Length: 165
Image 1 (cartoon, one colour):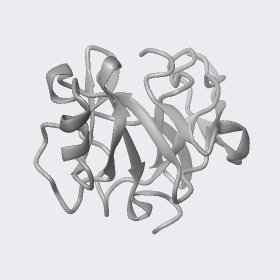
Image 2 (cartoon, helix red, strand yellow):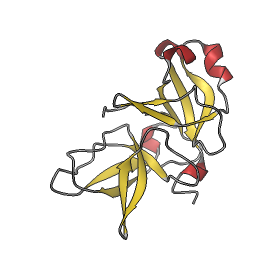
Image 3 (cartoon, one colour):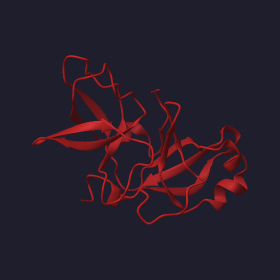
Image 4 (cartoon, rainbow, N blue to C red):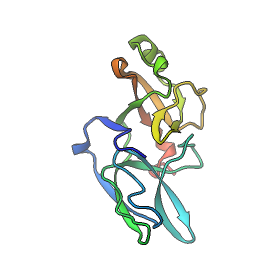
């Protein structure tokens, strides 16, 4: 995967608290800074894992934040990942899955309040702005972004986070 696919726009990462979660072994630094992190249960233990294509789904996934640093797991040993908490009102920014869907301010503005998922194609996390608006999609587009970079801003529905279950 790649670093910093998703960034915090507001209020700024320095003012958002972080939490640390366990990550299972099996890969070296399986979660990179700037990637979305969910919770999973293995046996009776709770671990952090990298989000998948189509996440987060309200009622199924528990988004715990964006990785603040690379995780410390290795192939042979479990590790940890520090994530920025998904507090209400935090605005994130990422590239739109289709650059032509977010290359003008008017196109970005027209996406306001649309509920969509993350897309994971070719090891890059983007926002699937072409997805149908869905009540169980966990990202809420704000109608803001950077058209010159084909980026859109979004918030996470608190119902898709570990804070809302």
